[in-house]
Length: 144
Length: 89
Image (cartoon, rainbow over all chains, first blue to last red; front, side, top):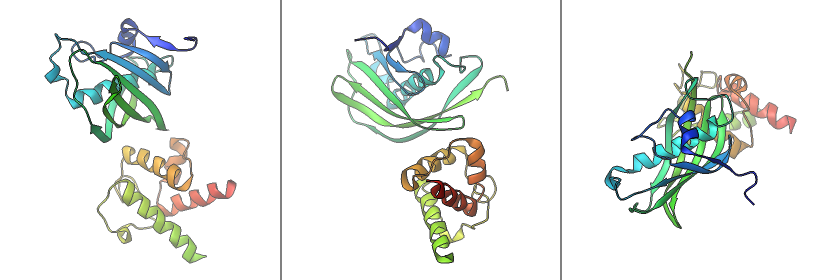
Protein backbone atom coordinates (compact mmCIF):
# COMPACT_ATOMS: atom_id res chain seq x y z
CA UNK A 1 0.00 0.00 0.00
CA UNK A 2 3.01 2.28 0.53
CA UNK A 3 4.14 2.01 -3.08
CA UNK A 4 4.57 5.47 -4.52
CA UNK A 5 4.65 7.26 -1.17
CA UNK A 6 7.88 9.23 -0.89
CA UNK A 7 9.34 9.65 2.56
CA UNK A 8 12.26 11.96 3.23
CA UNK A 9 14.53 11.46 6.23
CA UNK A 10 16.55 14.00 8.13
CA UNK A 11 19.79 13.23 6.32
CA UNK A 12 18.17 13.95 2.98
CA UNK A 13 16.48 17.07 4.37
CA UNK A 14 19.99 18.31 5.25
CA UNK A 15 20.88 18.01 1.58
CA UNK A 16 17.83 19.97 0.48
CA UNK A 17 17.45 22.73 3.08
CA UNK A 18 20.21 24.97 4.44
CA UNK A 19 18.43 25.13 7.83
CA UNK A 20 20.11 23.50 10.83
CA UNK A 21 19.38 23.01 14.53
CA UNK A 22 17.88 24.94 16.23
CA UNK A 23 16.12 26.43 13.24
CA UNK A 24 15.20 23.24 11.42
CA UNK A 25 11.64 22.38 12.41
CA UNK A 26 11.02 19.21 10.44
CA UNK A 27 12.07 15.76 11.66
CA UNK A 28 11.03 14.05 8.44
CA UNK A 29 8.61 14.11 5.54
CA UNK A 30 6.08 11.32 5.74
CA UNK A 31 4.37 11.80 2.39
CA UNK A 32 5.68 13.79 -0.53
CA UNK A 33 4.44 14.46 -4.03
CA UNK A 34 7.30 16.53 -5.47
CA UNK A 35 6.25 19.97 -6.62
CA UNK A 36 2.69 19.53 -5.37
CA UNK A 37 2.17 18.60 -1.72
CA UNK A 38 3.79 17.12 1.34
CA UNK A 39 3.28 16.32 4.97
CA UNK A 40 6.11 17.04 7.37
CA UNK A 41 6.39 15.78 10.93
CA UNK A 42 7.86 17.29 14.06
CA UNK A 43 7.68 15.67 17.46
CA UNK A 44 7.37 18.07 20.39
CA UNK A 45 9.53 16.58 23.12
CA UNK A 46 9.77 17.32 26.83
CA UNK A 47 13.24 18.78 26.41
CA UNK A 48 11.98 21.24 23.84
CA UNK A 49 11.08 24.66 25.09
CA UNK A 50 7.44 24.58 24.12
CA UNK A 51 7.08 28.29 24.74
CA UNK A 52 9.54 28.97 21.97
CA UNK A 53 7.48 27.10 19.42
CA UNK A 54 5.44 30.17 18.62
CA UNK A 55 2.93 30.69 15.81
CA UNK A 56 5.64 32.24 13.66
CA UNK A 57 7.68 29.05 13.92
CA UNK A 58 4.67 26.97 12.89
CA UNK A 59 4.58 29.05 9.73
CA UNK A 60 8.35 28.64 9.32
CA UNK A 61 7.95 24.86 9.66
CA UNK A 62 5.32 24.88 6.91
CA UNK A 63 7.63 26.99 4.76
CA UNK A 64 10.39 24.41 5.26
CA UNK A 65 8.03 21.63 4.14
CA UNK A 66 7.10 23.76 1.13
CA UNK A 67 10.78 24.26 0.34
CA UNK A 68 11.38 20.51 0.40
CA UNK A 69 8.36 19.98 -1.86
CA UNK A 70 9.76 22.43 -4.41
CA UNK A 71 13.35 21.27 -4.16
CA UNK A 72 13.04 17.51 -3.98
CA UNK A 73 13.93 15.72 -7.16
CA UNK A 74 14.55 18.78 -9.27
CA UNK A 75 17.08 21.50 -9.88
CA UNK A 76 16.28 23.67 -6.88
CA UNK A 77 18.96 22.22 -4.62
CA UNK A 78 20.47 24.00 -1.63
CA UNK A 79 23.47 26.02 -2.68
CA UNK A 80 22.26 26.75 -6.19
CA UNK A 81 18.88 28.14 -5.20
CA UNK A 82 17.46 29.79 -2.12
CA UNK A 83 13.86 29.71 -1.03
CA UNK A 84 12.36 32.69 0.75
CA UNK A 85 9.10 32.91 2.64
CA UNK A 86 7.65 36.02 1.08
CA UNK A 87 3.99 36.05 2.06
CA UNK A 88 1.78 34.81 4.89
CA UNK A 89 -1.93 35.13 4.29
CA UNK A 90 -5.13 34.49 6.26
CA UNK A 91 -3.50 32.44 9.01
CA UNK A 92 -5.53 31.26 11.99
CA UNK A 93 -4.03 29.75 15.13
CA UNK A 94 -6.68 27.59 16.70
CA UNK A 95 -5.15 25.31 19.33
CA UNK A 96 -2.17 25.20 21.65
CA UNK A 97 0.70 22.79 21.22
CA UNK A 98 1.48 20.35 24.04
CA UNK A 99 4.53 18.32 24.94
CA UNK A 100 4.15 14.91 23.33
CA UNK A 101 2.29 16.24 20.31
CA UNK A 102 3.28 14.91 16.95
CA UNK A 103 2.83 17.93 14.74
CA UNK A 104 1.98 17.26 11.12
CA UNK A 105 2.39 20.06 8.62
CA UNK A 106 0.29 19.55 5.47
CA UNK A 107 1.08 21.85 2.59
CA UNK A 108 -0.27 21.86 -0.95
CA UNK A 109 0.68 24.00 -3.93
CA UNK A 110 -2.28 26.05 -5.14
CA UNK A 111 -0.67 28.50 -7.55
CA UNK A 112 2.57 29.05 -9.37
CA UNK A 113 3.64 32.20 -11.18
CA UNK A 114 7.21 32.54 -12.35
CA UNK A 115 9.45 31.86 -9.37
CA UNK A 116 6.61 32.41 -6.88
CA UNK A 117 4.71 29.51 -5.36
CA UNK A 118 1.64 29.76 -3.12
CA UNK A 119 0.61 26.95 -0.78
CA UNK A 120 -2.22 26.22 1.59
CA UNK A 121 -0.88 24.99 4.89
CA UNK A 122 -2.31 23.23 7.90
CA UNK A 123 -0.68 22.18 11.16
CA UNK A 124 -2.41 19.41 13.07
CA UNK A 125 -1.81 17.20 16.08
CA UNK A 126 -4.02 14.15 15.99
CA UNK A 127 -7.46 15.50 15.10
CA UNK A 128 -6.69 18.97 16.51
CA UNK A 129 -6.13 21.64 13.88
CA UNK A 130 -3.40 23.84 15.35
CA UNK A 131 -3.13 26.40 12.56
CA UNK A 132 -4.07 26.95 8.94
CA UNK A 133 -3.51 29.53 6.27
CA UNK A 134 -1.66 30.34 3.07
CA UNK A 135 2.00 31.07 2.44
CA UNK A 136 4.11 31.89 -0.58
CA UNK A 137 7.69 30.97 -1.37
CA UNK A 138 10.05 32.61 -3.87
CA UNK A 139 12.80 30.48 -5.36
CA UNK A 140 15.80 32.60 -6.28
CA UNK A 141 19.07 31.58 -7.90
CA UNK A 142 21.98 31.90 -5.48
CA UNK A 143 24.49 32.12 -8.29
CA UNK A 144 23.02 35.28 -9.81
CA UNK B 1 -19.87 48.01 -27.09
CA UNK B 2 -17.89 50.76 -25.45
CA UNK B 3 -20.09 50.44 -22.39
CA UNK B 4 -19.44 46.70 -22.21
CA UNK B 5 -15.69 47.25 -22.55
CA UNK B 6 -15.69 49.91 -19.85
CA UNK B 7 -17.74 47.56 -17.68
CA UNK B 8 -15.00 44.94 -17.88
CA UNK B 9 -12.38 47.60 -17.14
CA UNK B 10 -14.32 48.49 -13.99
CA UNK B 11 -14.63 44.84 -12.97
CA UNK B 12 -10.88 44.37 -13.34
CA UNK B 13 -10.20 47.49 -11.28
CA UNK B 14 -12.61 46.21 -8.64
CA UNK B 15 -10.80 42.86 -8.59
CA UNK B 16 -7.42 44.55 -8.20
CA UNK B 17 -8.60 46.79 -5.36
CA UNK B 18 -10.42 43.99 -3.56
CA UNK B 19 -7.81 41.25 -3.91
CA UNK B 20 -4.88 43.52 -3.09
CA UNK B 21 -6.77 45.35 -0.34
CA UNK B 22 -5.90 48.71 -1.86
CA UNK B 23 -7.48 51.76 -0.30
CA UNK B 24 -7.89 53.84 -3.43
CA UNK B 25 -10.82 55.00 -5.51
CA UNK B 26 -11.10 52.83 -8.66
CA UNK B 27 -11.63 56.02 -10.66
CA UNK B 28 -8.02 56.99 -9.90
CA UNK B 29 -6.69 53.95 -11.76
CA UNK B 30 -5.93 54.99 -15.30
CA UNK B 31 -6.80 52.48 -17.98
CA UNK B 32 -3.46 52.84 -19.76
CA UNK B 33 -1.13 53.33 -16.77
CA UNK B 34 1.36 50.58 -15.81
CA UNK B 35 0.18 48.33 -12.99
CA UNK B 36 3.68 47.55 -11.73
CA UNK B 37 6.57 49.79 -10.81
CA UNK B 38 5.41 53.25 -11.69
CA UNK B 39 1.66 53.68 -12.02
CA UNK B 40 -0.13 51.56 -9.42
CA UNK B 41 3.18 50.40 -7.94
CA UNK B 42 2.28 46.73 -7.60
CA UNK B 43 4.98 44.11 -6.91
CA UNK B 44 5.55 40.43 -7.70
CA UNK B 45 3.53 39.19 -4.71
CA UNK B 46 0.64 41.31 -5.94
CA UNK B 47 1.08 39.64 -9.33
CA UNK B 48 0.69 36.22 -7.73
CA UNK B 49 -2.50 37.37 -5.99
CA UNK B 50 -3.84 38.76 -9.27
CA UNK B 51 -3.09 35.47 -11.04
CA UNK B 52 -5.13 33.67 -8.37
CA UNK B 53 -7.93 36.24 -8.57
CA UNK B 54 -8.17 36.16 -12.36
CA UNK B 55 -8.35 32.37 -12.30
CA UNK B 56 -11.01 32.26 -9.59
CA UNK B 57 -13.18 35.14 -10.77
CA UNK B 58 -12.71 35.22 -14.55
CA UNK B 59 -11.58 31.66 -15.28
CA UNK B 60 -8.47 33.12 -16.89
CA UNK B 61 -5.05 31.52 -16.57
CA UNK B 62 -1.76 33.41 -16.74
CA UNK B 63 0.62 30.53 -17.40
CA UNK B 64 3.99 32.23 -17.10
CA UNK B 65 5.87 35.47 -16.53
CA UNK B 66 6.09 36.37 -20.21
CA UNK B 67 2.33 36.25 -20.58
CA UNK B 68 2.00 38.07 -17.26
CA UNK B 69 4.33 40.84 -18.40
CA UNK B 70 2.10 41.45 -21.41
CA UNK B 71 -1.23 41.04 -19.60
CA UNK B 72 -0.27 43.12 -16.57
CA UNK B 73 1.05 46.05 -18.62
CA UNK B 74 -2.10 48.09 -17.88
CA UNK B 75 -5.82 47.76 -17.24
CA UNK B 76 -6.44 47.99 -20.99
CA UNK B 77 -3.85 45.25 -21.64
CA UNK B 78 -5.38 43.01 -18.99
CA UNK B 79 -8.89 43.48 -20.37
CA UNK B 80 -7.59 42.74 -23.88
CA UNK B 81 -5.95 39.56 -22.56
CA UNK B 82 -9.17 38.48 -20.84
CA UNK B 83 -11.17 39.09 -24.02
CA UNK B 84 -8.62 37.26 -26.15
CA UNK B 85 -8.45 34.29 -23.81
CA UNK B 86 -12.22 34.09 -23.35
CA UNK B 87 -12.60 34.23 -27.13
CA UNK B 88 -10.37 31.18 -27.46
CA UNK B 89 -12.49 29.06 -25.10
